[in-house]
Every structure is written in C-alpha cells, then in structure tokens.
Length: 300
Image: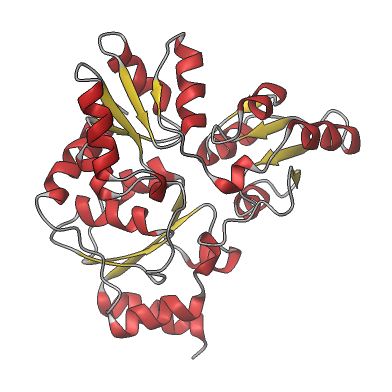
C-alpha cells in the first residue's frame, strides 16, 4: 500500500475528512476531500458529518474548525504552522484599542487567533469583508484587525474610514506595482488578479482584487487565455486543474508562504496514525470566538 492508499484507508477507519486551503502543496490539494479559501473552509467545517477533521492549513484555520466543532476531533498535521499576520496583534492590544474607541465595532479578519476572534464582534474573510463591513459601518465606527490592507481596501469600497491595525501578510506585502508592469510587458493583454492583502499601489494597478476563491470563480467566467495571479503561488495548482485550457503566471514566483508549505503527505499520515496533533480552544475563548464566527456565517 502506498502512502496515498494508507491515508485513504485511515480516513475510512477514523471517519475523517481532509480539508485543505488553496495555498497548500499540490499533492495535499489532490488528496483533500475539499479545497477552498478561508470562507469556503469555514462553511465546510461548520457542516461536516465526519467525526475527525484533518485541517491542512495553518493553525488559526484549525482553531476555527475546532471552535465550530467542539464535539469533533480536529487534527492539524503541522502544529507549528503559524501565521505572522495573526501574531501581529494580541488580546491585550485589541482590548486597549477597544477601550480607546468604545463606540466602535470590531471586525477581525479570520486570519487571526481565537483570542482575537473572542474580542471581536464579527469575523470577515477576504471574500465577504465588503458585505459584512457594509452592515456594521452604516451605524458604527469600525475597528478592523489585523490586516491593514484588507481593511483599507474594504473601507475604500464603502467610502468609509476604519480604525486599522498595522498588521500585514509578509508574502503579499512583497508584491509591487513594478512587478505588475513587468508582468504586463511579458504577457500583453493578460488580466492581473491580486489579493486584497496586497498593498494599495498593487491593488490599484491590478485589473481585479479578489480572494483566492473569487479568483477561481472569476477565471471560470472569462474567455481570456492568460492570467497573471498576484497571491500565494499555491493557488496556481487549483487554477490550472480547473482551467486546463488557460495559462496562469504568478506575479511573483517567490510568493510562497513557508507555513502553508509545511504540510506533507507523510505528516497527514502520521497525524491520522497517532491522532496526537489535536487542536482545542479552551473556554470561555471558544464560545466567545464562536459568536464572531457565527455572526460572519449568518451575514455571508
């Protein structure tokens, strides 16, 4: 039995499902039962029937699955796979910011720790931030944490001013407007799609600003033969698989999240064998965080 067969056998034995983010390595996406962006994964995690969820992503994603499924076992093959942006704000820092702005509602990007979600009024993802923020910003000042770029992009679309925390994704922050100019020169006519975690000059220079799931849906509706993709390169596997007749170039070849790439088939096999890499969120953090996640799902 090869490693893929062993994993499939253990999935049946453990009554497990494999969820994977779009940035995961190709071999992990290939074996996953479901692949998606943060919103798609949150929705899926909230409705699974299996007793065990193996979450192939970074730690805050597995935390979200655990919060939504307190009666299930959530495993992460890579417990050391963190997120620099999620670590850029702490609970005490957010509480201090809230104290300075007592009338504001807190929207937190789902790329945050359970502690931050517990201090927030509602979570958002890159695909639903505009819809959720519109509801809150019509009545309240908005604190947006931790990603300043997604927050600024959302505020711009609404014609609002948000109170932004200066967090960012190191992978997306490395993309530049000059790289877009170079890519357009190399591939004339190819639309440039970038993620809202990119900086404003990059967003302004692109043809569309979309979540990874949004990119996948957008490409399916277009007849363009070539696209330039400005996000973590893991999405290219899914785009090419779903659109074999189209060509996709990364805006930045080295736009690689090292934490997303820590997952391997061997680690998936080991976590199913040992059932040791369990992710749990203690109370009352779990219940408080669930309120903000549930609010997002209800509004999406």
